[in-house]
Image 1 (spheres, helix red, strand yellow):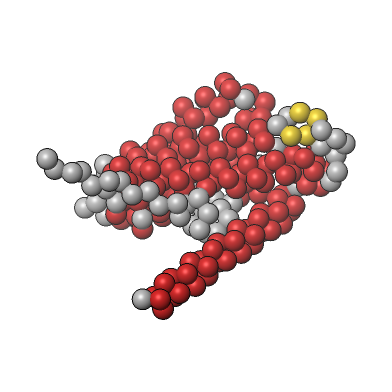
Image 2: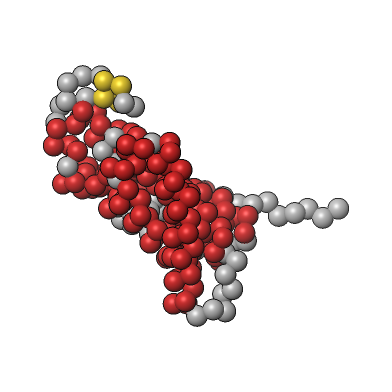
Length: 211
């Protein structure tokens, strides 16, 4: 009986290599449009339906095709996926989707699809790649929801669309505040990952010393 190798899933994309908080990629839609939980949900669904499905499809594009042409094909596939995504989101969240529709379109040419595919995902077996890319999407969701919920509470005094209190800081809905907030969250994320890495290094050093 032949044992099939298990698929390894790396948690890197969730925090340590979070494409928003650690790499600084795909930040514009979150900075500008993630002002509420609903907007963050729409951005996350858009990112999942456009980027993730495009990554799975584009894996079948032959690697022997010239790099520049491959990148253009990736963008073309994402542009095709944008159409059903936009229609679905307009049906589910008509008002909110109209408010941030331009930032959904920007996702078509995001760095997860155009850069990470070549440098990371397409170097893995298909099943491992699918799970790894999904972790990166979850990392995007973490950043989007964190920013959206904080800004909704401060700017509108609500959470999940339900009123909690009077608005605390109406300026929290502005892009400038979104930029500052994302920077703060990125600093916290970097501090946590650095601390964990140092702990792991110390533990490894102690283990080797004991040997």
